[in-house]
Every structure is written in structure tokens, then in C-alpha cells.
Length: 257
Image 1 (cartoon, one colour):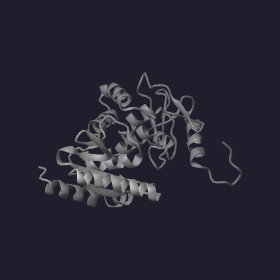
Image 2 (image 1 turned 180 degrees about the vertical axis):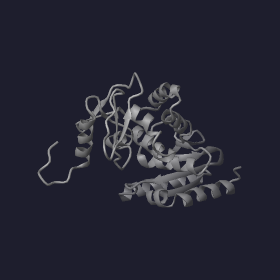
Image 3 (image 1 turned 60 degrees about the vertical axis):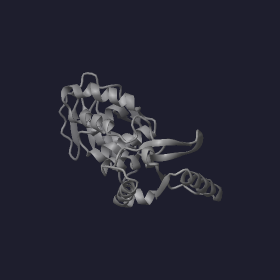
Image 4 (image 1 turned 90 degrees about the horizontal axis):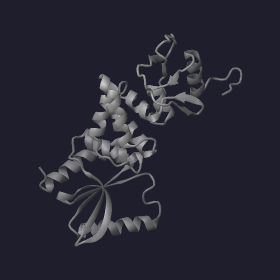
């Protein structure tokens, strides 16, 4: 990484300078590592150094390595960083449950980790009573998508919305059949109440053909006795309370407890 005289350092350059000051064995970790892996949006300068080192670095949080088996580090954008599994285990100690949940879904959507791999790592690391791995286990236990990876970060946010607002756990990517015949695969469903919920991302209905297929599919579901609710990206991001209230009201209309 090079910088011209007088130019403002980039975030990557700031982080690399911090690691150089931290000495041999220093790694980007916690929120800095999550930022490098595109699991969080904002860079917080946090690094981990070998336990024998005690550097004082202004403007950064420095952790000392506590684990005799830290896992193989990775290189991301030329910067040494904790691997995704360890990053998510550590992230739970410095962020809220909602931030950790979204980071987990981003990592799964990007195929950086698997649910089983996360569980193994978190269970191993939680043995010493650490808060981060315990928080990760709680997120995995409450995960609305169960053990399936999301098709997109958007669907991850929808799953988090269900959990955050206390809605009953819905089935993800549910296949609807009627009289033994395949009708549709819906984003989320409550099969016992024949309630399907479709969440349209940014690229939904980009062509007349796509719109026609969606309308035909929805009509087939309604004819088979299903109720279909549709929401957009803006609904999920800007009006999550409205989405939750609508689903809850429809469940009440259908006689759900």
C-alpha cells in the first residue's frame, strides 16, 4: 500500500499502520476483522497481539491473544486478519445481538462459513466462559433460517425481523404442494395456517415476464386456499414494525394462537 505525500490515509492504510506498530504476530480482529470480511459496515480499529506484547496504540483497542490455538490467520486485502470463524466468535463480545446476527447471515450468504463450522468453533471457544462465543451460540440457536444458509443478505434481514419482533418461527423456502402437485416455493411460510410471505428485493419484477410469473404463482396459491402477503426491501429496512404488525394481524385473522 502506498500513499502520495499530503494525501489522507485510507482505512486500509490506517489499519496496516496500526498492525505494523503492533509488531510481529499482530492481527486485525473483532470489528476491524469483521469490516475486512464485509460483515459490518464501519471500521473500528481493533487488533490482537501475542500475549507477551503490551503495545500502547492511540486511537485503537488492543487485545492480547488468550487462546493457545487461535486458528490459522488469513490475509485480506494484504492485511493479516483473524479467519471468519474466529472473527464471528470474537465479534459477539463487542457488538449487540442484532449486529452479530446480521454479520452471521452475511458470512453465510458469502459462503465464508457454515452453520456447523460456527457451532463447532463457538462451542470450543466457549469452554472458558467467554461472552463472544456464548453470544454466537445464542444467535445460532435463535436463527430463523435454522441451519440453512440464506440466498441473500435481504432474506437474512427478514429472518432477523421475525426473531426481533417475536413472531412465530416461519419455514424458510417452503415448497407448497396441492393435491400432490407442486405449486410454488415461497420465501417464508406458516403451513399450518396456509400463510405465505414473499419479500421482494431490489431486483424483483425487473421484467414484464418476471411480474407475470409472480402474479400467476400468487393466483395459484390463493386458489389453493393460501393467503399471500408481499413486502419490499423498503418495508423491511424502513418499516419493520409495520411488517411485523401486518403478519401478526393476519395470523390473528387466521385463528393462530
